[in-house]
Length: 79
Image (tube, rainbow, N blue to C red):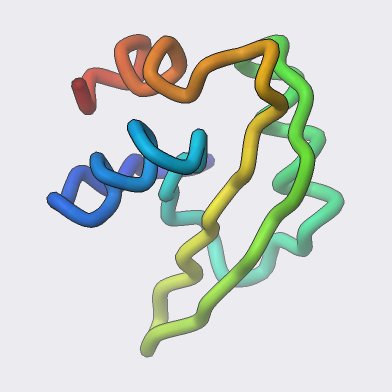
């Protein structure tokens, strides 16, 4: 499962770069993350970048231009 990140930087990335910032379980790999996001929101993921900080795995997920990240963020309650 994942948890949305709602910082100023994350919101700016949603608006400018069509990128979602989410926190995932540290044990999940990029393929698992891609399957979960595409299955949950019915969107196409272009690229995933991960960052591990302490016990947290932060994921920056670039979404295809056909699906605005703002729509997904609205479903998550970020925007």
